[in-house]
Length: 466
Image 1 (cartoon, rainbow, N blue to C red):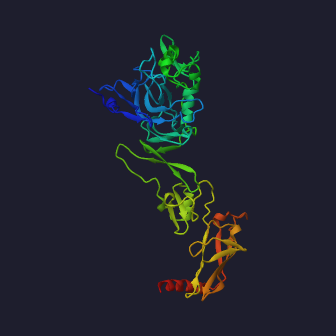
Image 2 (image 1 turned 180 degrees about the horizontal axis):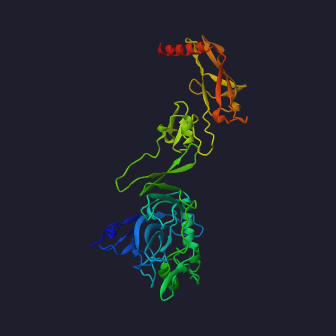
Image 3 (image 1 turned 30 degrees about the vertical axis):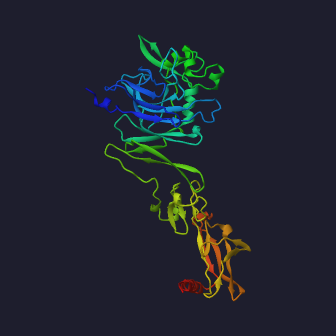
């Protein structure tokens, strides 16, 4: 008979390396679900020691991190595993479940005598992600690795839920370099017997063998004449067989949760990265899944922002305001060098003050050449039969003149097509201080007769039709 709780855990996590033919799996190797194992299937098969202090997990997530790339220590690639298990280190009358992260080295070959065909690099540490209400440690439900070109800046995002009946969830982020430092430099935990064989877990203060137990083969080990794990001394292997748990917990990247959501139990997380118009990378989270079903939600929904201010103040790296169409559009539909769309992800000022000056030909018979604009004698770049001014500021105020050259029967005629004066009016608060340009209003004083410009615009379209 299989208990339902155990039956839920009869599944496997698989991870393959980008290079080589190795396949890593986290699973149970008997039907009763009583023997968990982290296994590597390759020319040299390795697995975890069947020992309660090593592994009693509910597997959640596994992924590969190429830490050997540009490593000054000559370090090895790693496979990271996330799971929850009953903690032996807690002094409690009842079993306490905690969340863990463990890792093994890609180049691990096991030991020569001790830990034959067993991992010599298996280490694990507790994950810390505090919830608002004091309670038992939260349980990790899902993890996602957001990879960076520099592997040390890669980040694991994890979803946690409480062990109680509270409807609350949290998302915490952990940088790969932080986890690595705890495994490479942290203290170990050890059990000690106190008061009539009662066991208490404390920080190990004794001498740690060299090479460091659980470490991958690196330059320091190679200098000692150790080129692979089969050459590790028994003292190092015996230590890691007995002390695979780190004393220090892995703290979140921001010191606490990135998100705390009450009234829902989040079960999955996916992290996306997008290049904004400023060229920087931003990441957003998409949460989905529950016991009632699954939902697919678009990461961005720019069309819901109807005004420039709404679009900019949303601080959504997926969205930008496109001035010509006056729409909030996805940045993926725009060129990164676009000069007609903008977003403001960090500044408070939405910078939505903009205007468009129209310039059309008066003559329908003339061979019309492109117009050009000038402000205080400086030539400006025209935009589709007019001049578009983005983010109008005090420096943009002045007289804008549109000139053209018309060629009729071989003769050139210079002509001023239109002239606009741009003024910026700002409102003031009760104290008399000037409000920023976010509330500035563009005032146009048309020096040419506006009706004439409108007539010429209509006439131009008629000419093209003819």
